[in-house]
Every structure is written in C-alpha cells, then in structure tokens.
Image (tube, rainbow, N blue to C red; front, side, top):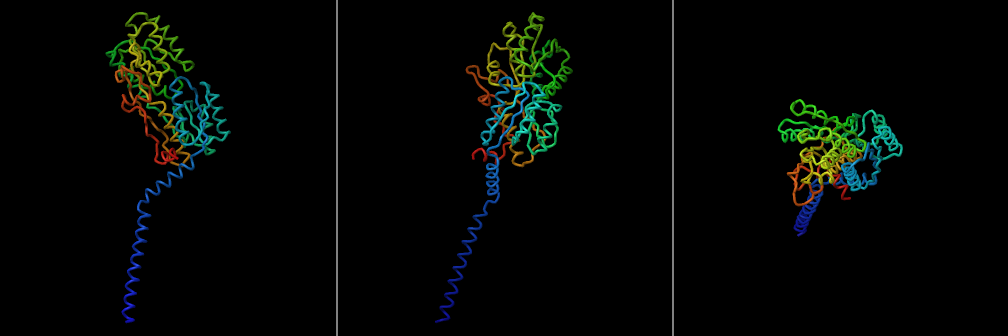
Length: 365
C-alpha cells in the first residue's frame, strides 16, 4: 500500500514538474520571440529620448525669394517634429558676415549646425572648429570637404541638362538665347558645366547676352532684361532665356510680359509656390523648370544632422534627385502649389532620404 502511494506521488510530481517546465519554456519563448523587434523598439525609444530639446543653428548666405523661405519652412518643420528649435542666421550675401555667424553659433554652443550655401574659403575654418568641438555640421550647396561633414546638393547638372535639352528641342536646335547666371556659388558653377557642354553640342544656338547678380536678383534681372529687349526689338531676335535660378526666371518673365514679347520662352531652375503661379499662367513665357521640392531639401538636411547627433554614420555627400516640371503637366482649371504638385508630377516631394525608423519613432514621441 505504501509502495503504491509512493509511486502515485512520484507520478503526480513528475507530471506537475513537466507542466511547470512547459509553462516556463512557453514564457521564455514568448519573451524572446522577436529579438529584432525588441532591439528596434529599444533603439527607437533611445533615439527619441536623446534628441528632444536640441538647439539647431541654420547659417544662411542669403534668404531671398520664396524658394529660400520654403526651404527654411522645411528645416523648421522637421526640427520641430523632433522636439528641437531652430535659430536662423542670415548674412545677406556677405560671406564675412556668414563666417562671423558661424563662429557665433559655435560660441553659443548650439547642438547642431546647418549651413546653406557659402564657400569653402569663408567657412572651412569655422566648420573645422565646430567639428573639433563635437558639434555636427550638415551643409547644403556649399563646396566643403571637411572630414565628418555631410554635404547635400540638388543634382544641379541634371537640372541644367533637362531644361537646356528642352530649350534646344523647342527651338529646333538653332536660335539666339540669353543666359541669366552668376558665378561664385557652388550650384551655379555645377549648372555652368552643363551649359558649357550644351554650347558645344548645339553650335547653332547662339548666346547673345549673359548677366546675373545675387543682390536683388529678380528686380535686377527684370531691369537688365528690359534693356536687352530694347537692344533686340524684333520678334525672332531672341528665341529663349535660360535662367539658372528661379529668381532670375521671375525677373526675366516679368520683363518679357511687360514688353509684350511672349514669343520668347523662359526655362528656369528651382520651383516655389510663387513660381508655379507664373508657370501655370498661359500668357506667361516661363514654360518649364527643373527642381527639387525646397521643403524636402530642408527636411532631408535636418534628418542627416539628427543622425549625426544620434551617433549614426552618415555619407559625405547626398545628392537629391530633381524633377522636370512643364506647363503641360499642370492642370488648366485650377492653381496648384508645391504641396499638391506630386498629384501631377511624378517624383515631386515626399522624399524619404535620411528618414530612419528611429527618426520616425522620435517624431511620434
């Protein structure tokens, strides 16, 4: 009898032990079912916690026109989504002032620095100082080759090539053109390379005038274009205007409209809400432009800066893909803005470049 009870007790204990082991195993497997997901969640939470409250300096060579204002909007939007604050320093095209603004941002101990335009000669010393002090730097349209700095550009040669090729096609490979361009800016120099190749490719397209200034660009272009139209008063004297900046395109467009010379077509680079109004106007000579969404440029630049703040490895160079936008692509019955442009032009806006999972998690937090 005692033996039977002992055997029964042993069986019960064995079964109970098996059940406990099974439960423990189930709980253990449940807890470690997705280690990758757990790690991802932990990283996202860490990123969100580390990034809030950052002070970001935006050092600009100039802040002229709607393109620049929309670029600044993109910067502020992305920083604010991440819980930070932006302070904008504008140099009004004065490179010495821009260098001084950069030094001020370093001395005021900003957490990160964004640079818009400028030159290596003016900025390299200050950028190196920032890097030495562990302040991350991301530049846009600046010729900077400082180790540790990520540089963004728009694919300027692609933009120039797209507009120039369409100009040549519309002109039948011959005619007289005006170039509005200014030296001394990284994007302009890259666009000029494409223009020089265009001149070799189309020898029957002659440049009859070339000018441009970064100071009051739209107004100055309008004034100078008015003088050129008086110099070439007959229809057919000028076939087209190629403008290497949307501010130049606006000025040329207004001069041509006021002179009643709308047989002259304008091809531009860059695009803003104000530009779209002119592009959609059937009476406007501005027929096409190549561009990157200016708000996207600001957003992407901020994302790479925050990657640096998070300790991520970032590339030295980031090229944003431009798109070609013509009047034919746009609706005739309503005015659109750059936010709506993606409905009509494939590839416009909504860039996901530099948008990591932990950044998205940080935005939600």
